[in-house]
Amino acid sequence: MPHASKPSRKSFQHRLDHMVQTLRSDILNGHYRAGDYLPGEKLLADQFLLSNKSIRKGLDQLVSEGLIQKIDRVGSQVLQAGTIETVSLGYNSTIERDIALSTLVDDFQALHPRVRVKCLPLQSTKDYIQSISAYMEHEMIDLFTVNNRDFQRLIEDGEIAALQPQKESEDVYPLTKEAFRSNGALYARPLVFSPLVLVYNRTHFAECGVPEPDGSWTWNDALRHAAALASPGQRHGMYFHLLSDNRWPIFPLQSGVNFLADEEWYERADNEVIASCRMCKTLISNHHVFPNMLSESSDDVNELFREGKVSMILTTYMSLNDFRDTELDYDISPLPFLFEPKSVTVVIGAAMNKRSSGKASAELLLDYLSSPRAQQLIRQRTLSLPATKKVAEAPPIAVQHAFEGAKLPELNIPSRFALFRETLSSSRLHSALHLSDGSFARLKTILKHYWADLMDESGLYLELRALFREEAKKRQQQ
Image (cartoon, rainbow, N blue to C red; front, side):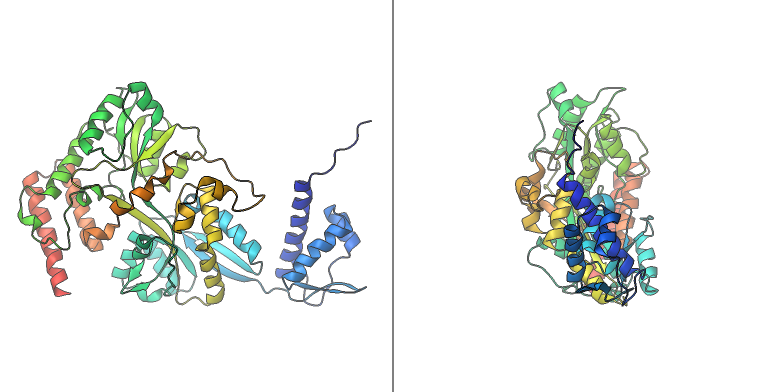
């Protein structure tokens, strides 16, 4: 008769962790009250299929957490019950993908068993800041995630006073702190960031004999190679969701115009900004290269790329997470450029409600999210770039060994993952356009009309000149 197999160490550890988590939860939720005794070691051993020695090890963990005390020859007495504290964290729809939020929350709660995180998904990106403001006003939220564009809206809406100023760290990239600074103070802790990059299907390039892109590519190069990659009825050469606020601004940014210092650029009718917008129109109007598709978001673009229906897209490191579990043969490259190789950069951080009634616990969570431990977890489980420089630039082998014994997912990582290090000098926040949120939206509308042939270049010039003249006057009055 064959012998039963010996239980694995992994199975034993799982049962022990389950016992500790169950007893901890029962204590914190008031099932066991202060002064009560936990079941005896024999009963616990039978319940959780563990040895008495293992039971004692688990009880020692609860002692170290201050939840019970062991009384010799009597038992394990509960010291505190119902002392659980709750921190409310608001986040937008992509944060789980961007930073592996559920993994971070589970790890935080294991480290701080008396604090529970209540995650509040706020799905509407259009009204995200409006929702955050209402939640803060009614003290329904302690922390929330915010990107640099959201932060600008908070400033202009007069909501910055509702945020708790934050301590700065020298360990994060300076650009990520610039994204959340106002009047010299930091109001959000940077978590992840990304420049916009060119993502390409290596199989398509090899099949068509097209050289893989590099930092020397201009938009004319991209257009020419995209035409060679396109196959009528099968795939297009390039695509991106033009109306995304993380896409269309690259064209005015790449004009090379310093919108703050050079206030006379708009006096030149055929200027670099006009030429950059013209280049974009040339690209998107070529339907052999660029599909005539009414995409609703960049998710549509990523889906086309996964399906092999487009060879090149523009996206962020955060969006690369849509490909991390695939077998897609892809890589990344700096954006093509026209006048200057600049790229729009997105930064995501976490901010605290100044009115929070649980500031101590909220601060604890905020410290954790920006800690090296949490940043390592983000790097291990996603393709996002942690804001902490040392973690973002660590070699893969160091990332894998950051947590001993941890089972890591096998991510489909592009071979040129580290190229962001060499392109940091070209990374620009949206604020580099020096436009208020209202003027930013107005610029987008002007460009939409031009790109849709509802306005010619003469009209585009007049509209841009009027817009930036108004901004120049505002700056002079400030």
